[in-house]
Image (cartoon, rainbow, N blue to C red; front, side, top):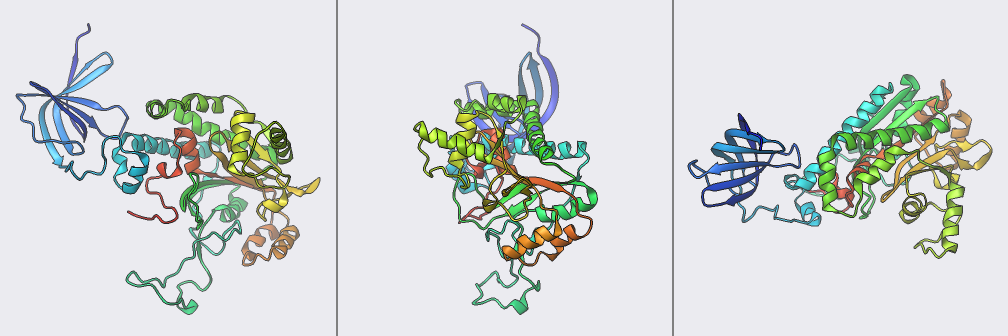
Length: 444
């Protein structure tokens, strides 16, 4: 057996577990940096205060390392913050559902810590990816005068809501802004404006949807990554999407191995690492919308039953998307050229078929849609006609982008929390954001 190497140091952290024996006390100490905990050994000769699970402590002593094991043999233990275990809400083996009721405390658990470390890694990976490719990060407004997608799911902003009482009615003359203002649902339109001067940009910020949804994929406040690129072709748009996702997944595989191992053990059937390695290893199949419909219709003839029957012209639901990725292709796919009627007004029609637009969605296993993007309509008269047909107003500034030096351009939006779901194997989107906001819930 090899000899111990000894280092004298000081450690800080939170007590996860205390186990007392006749002559020794063992403390499992967590500091949030890794799923691996430090074992502290306290001899009976050392004065030990009444520590308990959840309290924070300072430990001084000698770190003894031998091959793959290490222990901190304490010479001093000091309580920095006490914890009443009778009322401590982070109970042993707490479910994720329970932890959502105390979202300000749940970061004390190994699962949420692992998720948030991966969230951090993905944040850094996104910025590194775009910086390496010469993109500029821009900050687009959170307060806007439109909802971008035209779906009517934007939060309206008012300055007439006193904290002590609800107003009987709102007076437009008393508002801070002279027009209707909303929380942004996307940074895309303003991103397009910035791309018309900088060429290649991306936004990375919070967005908001006033949607009464309680699914495992939706939040009222979430983060979006939205690149916008001048002189971009449809093929380049597809490749950029694949490159970004693969770069992010690769970074997690390389730098968060311990967290992936921990999360995989929480769901041994998930095959998390293998699934992520497969995403990095191969190209994503490109499948037209019409081909995807043909595949799904054929699946129905083989006996597959969908809650919503498949028909040409439909907007796919998550059941259709997951079937394509999980059962048919068994990989992410880029589905492109959707019907014009089910996509946003700004998407450019396919030159040889005006009933289809140059849109694309990246569908991934277990989740469904991860990315939505398109080549934008760059023609002034064409876009003006679309806005008039759809009776969309207050976008004169957006039309100006087509009036003065317009160029072919495109981009996409990727839901950051959905990317985290993909990389962590977590099942619910509320568990991958620090403080989830969703219909009926906005606490802490």
